[in-house]
Length: 324
Ligand code: MN
Image 1 (spheres, rainbow, N blue to C red):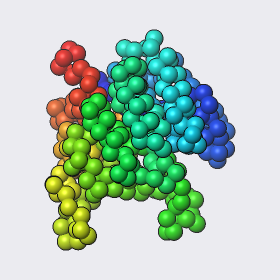
Image 2 (cartoon, helix red, strand yellow):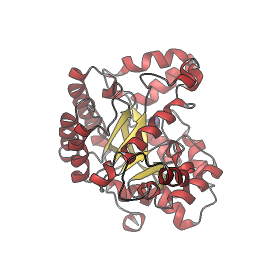
Image 3 (cartoon, protein in one colour):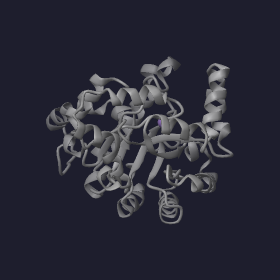
């Protein structure tokens, strides 16, 4: 088995259980109990599964909605508490587990300060935030201070789905389409396109935005973004073609899409350096994901990049050749 790094892997911090209660009531009780147990576990089954499937390092993030579900005035303290909790939990397992910071994204200045604290004091490797925050998106001008900090620290920003505040009319009356099946991807993919078309990546060319779920389907429309933006720019000016921000600024993980055809399509659009393996533990099955990537039709060099070295480079970890 090839060594793997995974980094859309979740845990639960004290005080955030209330946000998951409604979701857990909707699913079978045994599954809800298993999810809860796995989210609370750090050194037990989590490490056993990593060992069994060749995952050398797992980078953990607070399960959604995290601080994005808190009232604005409580979000900064809540994020700090979650980050301190994670740091304490992973300290004895530091050879296998790392952290991504939870951030109070309601307030760009406080979010930037907490990111800096988490990276420089707690040793976290980046951050993960859930989209959106009370109807606000991170392309708003006041977020420039935040993006400047992300760029200065040189750490990735993982944009993760969450329940949108208001579903678009086309699925407002269809709850089955509002969540992970479709609506989350629409919201999160659209959020990433807002960042691209508002020029965040022109102003902060060093920012690395990571999307899960095979890029929330964006890689498949990359050609069309150039074609239709070229035809109808609507007054927007960008330094590059939309497609050129993919892989330079927008990178993707394979979480929750264990399809070889989709993977090959994504590799074709993004290039082998733009696609990274991850699982979305405990919401997705480790065995399914690991077997999918081990059996994917890729050459050895591509498999090494997708499973390990792209993430290692992004997160500042040793490459396979350095670890050998
Ligand atoms: Mn996830």
